[in-house]
Image: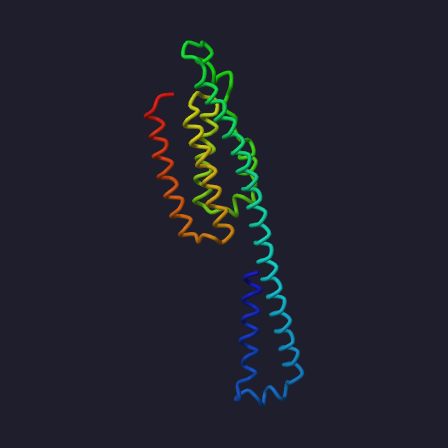
Length: 206
């Protein structure tokens, strides 16, 4: 594509020389060849434009598809969040003396949103999402996997909440509602809120 663009630009520049007065005598002598040359330039330029529009259309299709994937991932995480929240509330309602409290989350593990793994493994996701979002999502996913088998439901709920928020910010970026600098600023703000929420949970007892 780059080589094709370079050759097209070169031919266009050469074609522009045909309008320089000092070359008119030469042009008149070789009018047939020059007309063919100009036709070739027009054809190449047309093909270049078609390729450019095709690339733009393909990029837009990929963005639309990755947005749908993110929306599906958010739905899966929200389901895990709702179930985890219900599980935690059920745990809190158990009497303090109830022996099932001790190993409650061992027997009732917090549900991990498996679709998040499926989403993150897709090549389209890795080449389309912003680097900042990919870094955050990988960190959230790692911590979710680590905590889902433990007894830290409050931390798990915080992780799920901010994973959803990271995806929503990226959707805004992919839709063109946020520029990259605006996305980076929003991610920094989201990360600070996450750390504050995490500290608050850690300072409270289960």
